[in-house]
Image: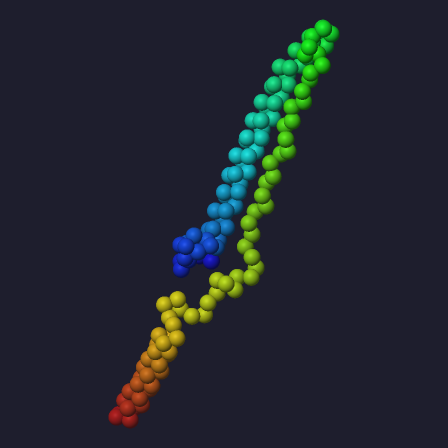
Length: 134
């Protein structure tokens, strides 16, 4: 979930789940803004072209012998770009939770537990011997 322990070749590129989701949402926002800017530029360009054609079409409408009187092509602006919904963090985070240390394994975990048991038993024996000596 955090960058610590995250695999650089994994699905979140070593940034952790939270930072990866934040980066994806920022990228989606940036792409949507660029698409909206391009769309507004196309609309503005189309409207200026239509505004230039209006006087020409009025002149050709007054002159019935003109060949361009019958032509008045419609400019299609096109649909507005879609804005993607933000990425959300899934409620099921069981893939990110582990109960073993990442350095551990079956043999190493058993050895560490056995070492802790020996340390506890030896500390107990030392404490009992010191108590008997006095």
